[in-house]
Image (cartoon, rainbow over all chains, first blue to last red; front, side, top):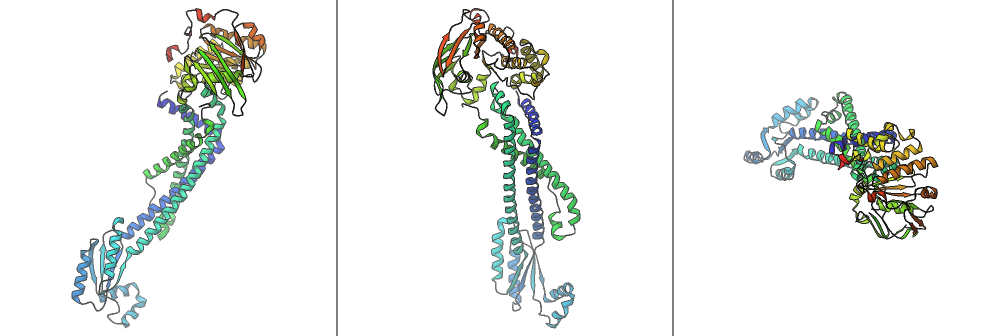
Length: 303
Length: 248
């Protein structure tokens, strides 16, 4: 029997097996669908969060506030130091006057407060446009910022990268928790599929005996059960992918105006990611079948 | 063809199913195995097609020690041995054709050839007209004939029958025995386990009698040497071999 003949036979028998124990098969399919749906959600949220953080990082501000006593020579030296930084793309000096205008524009109700304190109410600063900092460079970047903070004439360094790094840590935590949750759920799915395949193999125990009797190999005996597990996993994956697509289609337009929810639902999974999700279901189902059939009951007697 | 050398089979409980059995069955021989329930008939047969392994002793089938056959090769041994049971062991959800054509399908024959060889095997047992039926639609005798057709489909050198008439009335039993005799006449070695003494006496072939796991009597055939040993068909079994062309 060639591979195509065998695959065709296995598939046919797997479908019959699914139909024969329909309720428990549906349970297994739904379990894996729920697991993959939640895993897909974690993937979707993580993907959108990563994208958002990436955008934030691209727009991140880097401002070095200067101490009032810093003279022109010190200012020039500091400017040169910042410009030399390998992450610096551009630099602009903000004088106290420009800072005041910006402040009054942003907070009109507080304009009087600044006016009362005179021209030195707001400090001079250097605003730098930075290139995105690659993850491998983060520690070097942080050391550079700390070095700037310690320089004489620097009152304060305001780096958005600091809180973006904190958000990234939170993102990593969310990913880790999501991965753990997905692993637990998929473990439960594998266990469910293993139980269903085992039940099916129990229903077919007499047939398996006959198959052995006439000289069927283990490949031929186990093939339909492996296919049944794969089929359950793939069906669960398809349902999960469909449910994710439907959820996104319904929810994304409704939360588009919300800053947080909108950014979390801005993009959907790519076709490759969806295919991977479905295939992952198939692999989980296959694993369940292997786990189930590795037990003694299907082993050839007397071996 | 089949040789037992001091074969003992003990169950994990310590009880002996077979105790020091030594015997030899020649190619083309028809041999009854009889004894009361629990005498060890089924265990003896199971050892031949490696459904079980002996606790001690050796079993040679065609000169090969079956206990030493690797697990992965057991199916290939079984393809050379046809087995028929008292309870038929047909797959209820499959048609008669599918039941009989199971092995040709495993061996990769296309559907047309599967049909041809299944038809031929069923024709030999007189059931070629029931290919599309399901086992539940057949009588006990017909089911047993289907089981025999399934056992014959690969032209086995050895045909093992474990109480094949146990569920059948006298007339049907005679019919099944005639079928086995016919198969034997084509050169197949037949081992027929039964406790029906009347049936055994009516045929007159060699009889091995077991009691409490021991071989207590080995009565030779009253019919002279097996025909297959003296004819041109001896050991070939290809006179009307349904699979001989396709699986040679």
